[in-house]
Structures are given as structure tokens and as C-alpha cells.
Length: 427
Image (cartoon, rainbow, N blue to C red; front, side):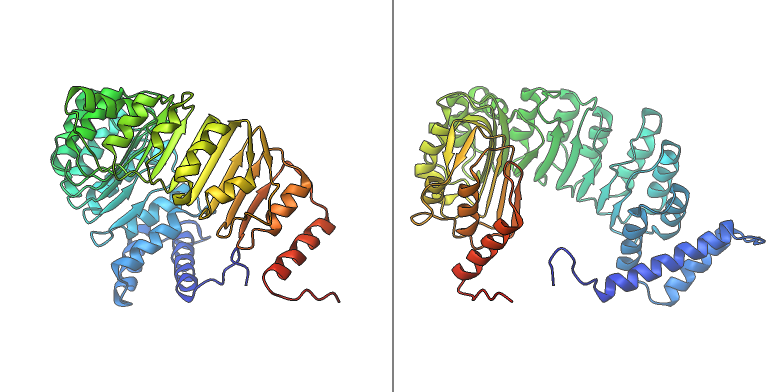
């Protein structure tokens, strides 16, 4: 059975049937010809039916997930189901995208009925300033929130409310273009959730819409933060703390993204982040990669870099890598040499590379590689065929710089079968 077409589980099928029954009942009550029914009474009857049938909070939660994410239901029907199914037993809610006219009503329903929520994702409901007091009410009433996603809508006032009432919060998404300033960041970093926060998604990719010195407050006062998703200038923030607060400062960051990194900043990153596992370097300065020589990175993503410098680094650190993403590398990468340096790679992605080659398939191959993407990266047809044929664990492949004929594909499959110890029979 193809992995891309899995058999639908019995529970999913039953859930789909129940959701269809609920929606069709509501639809008939609201829009059926010659039907004069009070929709509020119908909603009460449906809830009574679910209760008598023994519906658990997980069933209400799953029904909301299926209905709210449907591409086939209009906003009015989805809102009616939210109004009917959300109760204090539901702990997980993703609102999905609604038209502007529904924002206020959705926030009112969540504030009134969602007090048991532990995970709330409001992506798709862009709260405006005039409705922000509903957001404050939600944060105050949902006392057990552990994950809150409010991208593009956060401001200093909301962060202040979060800092006072969300004592269990671990994951917070306040990314995107927002009105957050140092005042809001300081409130958050010194609030009741400061010791619990592990993931904070803040800022905009590639844009320093929040000052690095403000992010330094999070690093300094939130000791368990492991990931600052999206924010692309973590290096200067770490350097600010190191240079101005404590030269022996260390944090628990496992992933970070930095831009235009120089050697001094990269050495500070290595010193202050002993648990670092995943690193994204955007346009690192020439000669800086040497600072990573004694690290044990599992994932590396690098953009606009020198291929020769990267290969020199991988001679000492490549054996630890599981995932490598290279974008716009200057120079050529010989994939056979890369396989020797990074024998444990599971995923390799190459985008807009200047040149790729593969000359030594018999000596060096990717024995664990499962995913390979090479887009807008020139490589000879023969080299690509040889690479694919010698990568026997491959499960995901995307290439666009070469053309493979049907005969090429048959040849590759045949070689794969032979290398896997299977016989290739022609009929």
C-alpha cells in the first residue's frame, strides 16, 4: 500500500460520518424548504444526543477540528458548529480562517465557552485593536493554556496580560508584523510563564522588526527557551547578553537562526549554546565557519555560502549531521566526498547551487539517505542516475535540473532492486 494513500482508519471514518450528520442536520434546519425550526433548539438537541451517546471531550474536540478545517463548509456553518460544540471539556482548538465579520463573535464564544483550553491557535482570526479586550478576556479565563498561537496580532498590552495570567504557558507564537516593543518583551520575560516557556516564535523572517537587545531580554530571563522560531538575528542577541550582562552566560537553545554571521558572533553562539543541535546560517561571513569545528550539530541549513569552506568544516563535524540543507552555495559540491564526510545523512536538500557532481559511487555512498531534493542545481544526468542508484534507502526524491526518460527510470529501479538483493524479472 502506497504511503501517500493510507487506508482511512475506522475512527476517522466514524468521525467523518458523525460530522456530516451534524452539519446536514444543521443545514436542513437552517435552509431546508418549508422548514420552520429554531436553530438554537436544534443545537441543544444535537448536544443532548451527543451527551446521551457518551461523547467524550476528545470527540467534541475532534469534531471541531474536522469541521473548522473543512474547505467545503461556509463560514456561517463552521461558526454555528463552533458555537455548539465548544465546551469546557475541549482542550485543543484551531479556529482556521474566517472572514473579518466573524472575528468578534468567535472571540466572544471562546471567552464564554473555552475555559478548558490548553492549546489555542487563532491563526486566521486577525484580532483588531477594537476587539483586543476579548483577547484579554480569553487569556484571563483560559488559565491552563500551555500553547498559544496569536501571530500578527500581538501587542504590548496582550503580552502584559499573558505575563500575568498564563503561568502554564510553554509555547507562544507572536510572530509576524506586530506592534511589540521592548515594553511588551520585558513584561513577558519577567512574567509568570518566564520559567516555563520553551518555544517562542517571534519576529519576521529576514526582518529585524524587533531589536536584538529586546530578544536578549528573553534569553536572559527565560532560562528554558530552546527555540526562537522565525527570528533571524539571534547571534547579536546572544552577543549582547555575553558582552553586557554575563560573559559566562549559557542558555538551552537547541535551534537558532542568524544572519550575516561573523566569526566572533559564531564563537559566542557556540560558547553560549552548549546544547545547540540545529543551526540556520543566512549569508555567513567569509571564514566564519571554522568557529563550528568542535560542535555536534544534527541539522545545518546554510544560505549564500562558500562550498569550499563548508566542505572544510564537514571534515570534522559532518559525521554527526542527520539533515543538511544548502542554498545558493558558491562553488561545487562533490557528493561522493560529501557522503564520506556525512555518512549518517538522512535528508539532503540542495537549492540553487552553483554546481553538483558525483564521481565516486563505489567508494562513497549515502547509506542512510531517505530524502533528496535538488532544485535549480545543475548536475549531469549520469551523475544523478548513479547517485540515485547508489542510495538504496531513498524514499523522497525531487529534481528539476535534469530530464529522466522512462528508460532511465526503469534502469534506476532495476539497479535498485539488484543492489537490494532482489531479482529483476522482465515479463
